[in-house]
Image (tube, rainbow, N blue to C red; front, side, top):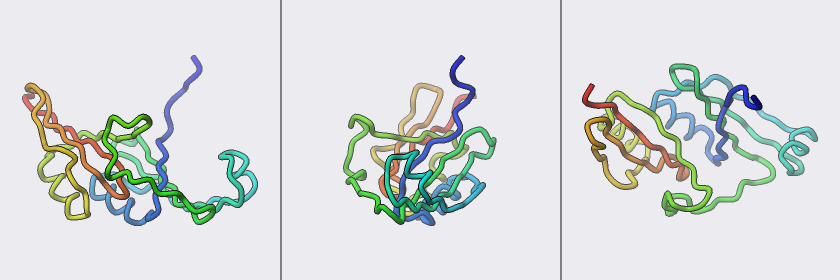
Length: 147
């Protein structure tokens, strides 16, 4: 077998603190922050003169992590993610199971999140929705129902 595990998903943001606040409100835990720089970083990611602040957050069960990177140099480019639909090639989204989808959406909307569509019932299994989070990060939420 070639893969032992998946360690994390990395997302580039401009406002690292806003990402930490948003995903903390969602229920993730900040497990580490650091700054990386130097020749080794550039050799790994193919950029020169890299200085990047990094925050790693994990889900309450400890199994899933997101690494947020905020580049000081070179400056990050900014696509218009809030106007991309989910069918764009390479578009990302992160899905979380929550205990109360309506409460979670209400709390995240106070931090600037917006629903992509609406909260929809899927059979007798889930309530589902997609949100635009900070900087256009697409977040999907699922609440298990009928159990």
